[in-house]
Length: 132
Image 1 (cartoon, helix red, strand yellow):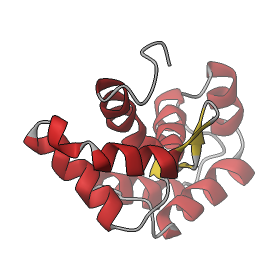
Image 2 (tube, rainbow, N blue to C red):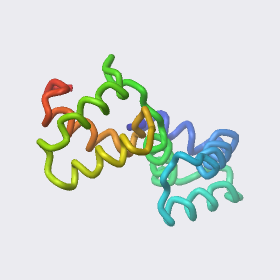
Image 3 (cartoon, rainbow, N blue to C red):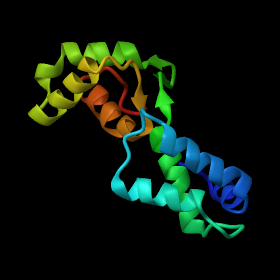
């Protein structure tokens, strides 16, 4: 999650927020919504020198969701994916499908948008300590 200092810095700098929006819009691994596509297009074509605080916050939230993680606090994401897949039958149907889709996609990482449910599943399967 972005700090207010970072949000304020980015929202006041068109040389920072326009390229960031362009990069996110072109990122093929980032699963965006229709709202996100429209929002990013709007930011790329923004005519003013500043975004609102809320626009800066949304832009950085989208950046965080698109971020790719290969490890979390020293734990290897590919290894965690394999371990969760091996124990997938201890999960409910929805979480089992998430892990199967992740494993079958061949991706050896999770995005910031996936990190929340991935950590929850790892903790449930005791592959990650509860305090992490």
